[in-house]
Image (cartoon, rainbow, N blue to C red; front, side, top):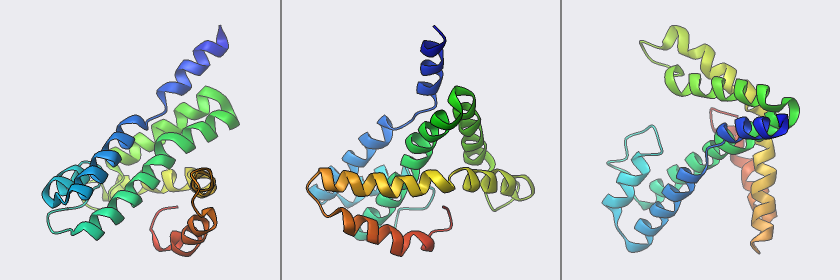
Length: 163
């Protein structure tokens, strides 16, 4: 019974279905050439203004957001569940939620939010690197060049302010 409860708790720490649906909707809008529609959907998954983004910028914003949110919503909770079970997975989710709510580098959150953001960055350090591996392996499974995915992650990973 304990495993069932732990499994249920761990399941509540995962968040990926909505992200996948939004990613597919953005792809469809871009393939249709619907710039305004793509901007609207991208605005729902990123924290930046999308009004002036072109298709290339929208694709970049989507890839960045999906990669980051895959770490936040899937890889990190599973990593912490593996390391410390349901309690550690829940602790990670609390850190992630706190960062989402107050982890901004602007007032009124500046004095408090930096700690939440820094704590989440530290918590995501290993899961972010695991995500690089998983994306590269997924590319191989889909018949794509996993080494290119890995190389891109290695080349560009340090350009982002987060792990």
